Length: 255
Image (cartoon, rainbow, N blue to C red):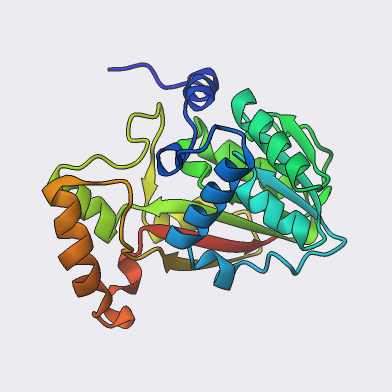
């Protein structure tokens, strides 16, 4: 039996990996690099602009846990939020600082472990943790910390991967690995399992999202088959029939 991955294992992995790096030819950390990341991020995750009101937190304190290169954090900052971002990886925080600086924005950016946040109780109006819970060593500890630093009636947004999803099934069928499948931790959840993880919140609303869009990362016959046939065929199906199979589970929670 392999030893359980530690937070140090997770930190080491994410210090060596930059999410979506393959989609840009610009030098890492350049304006073109950040522009490409933003375009691709909201191309494949177009539902975020509908579900998350990035402009709705003006003057409010927003914490992003697992901020990466700061793509979402910059959106909140442009909307007038007072933003703080933490990430386990020093390389990610360095990129986020460059991103924020190049856009003339302000942010408090720190290298920190989401399972042990360096903030007092009741510090933030919104905690945003998109694509973090599934990669950390102790998901419950991270969720508990996010709830702890929220103000009373504060809001948390989490995103995890749906185990009962089209992409999980297609990955196994086509023998194409998922993104970051080699990470020390990669956990997928059912909606019921995610709800149980978030049981400490007063209210939880779970939305299934991320349905097939054409991929720029996969080539060859499998990529052609996916982009030419599967994407179109899947998306003509009524959403009422396939809604529960979205690859992402987004949870909107109230403390």
